[in-house]
Length: 116
Image (cartoon, rainbow, N blue to C red; front, side, top):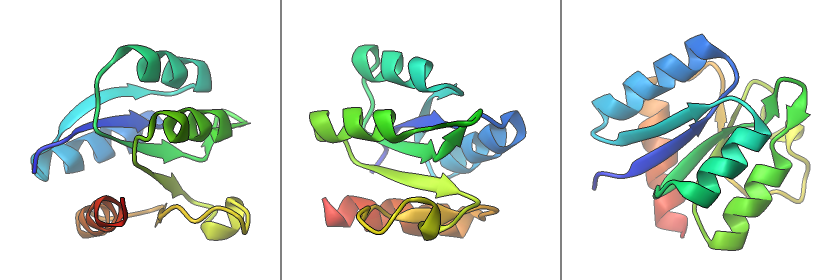
């Protein structure tokens, strides 16, 4: 199943790598965007099926982006170097631990879609 995936990542090299991985998996990339405000604008204006969110965007947490995605019922996963402990205990979303490989992204996407 091909999806349009919104990439929210502030590190250009990581964003390019994630974009390459997603394309290799057969998906289309929306973005990438690197700030909370740009992500919120994309959510309001661009069609997409799924999102991959970095937790920390230039020192600002992506909680507002996650809340906006929850509000429209769009599935997403977090990608972070902080691990699950960086999200807090109340968050049940799938976490993709940085650094990650193609296989880990494929698995995380499949698990997140199956959970929806």
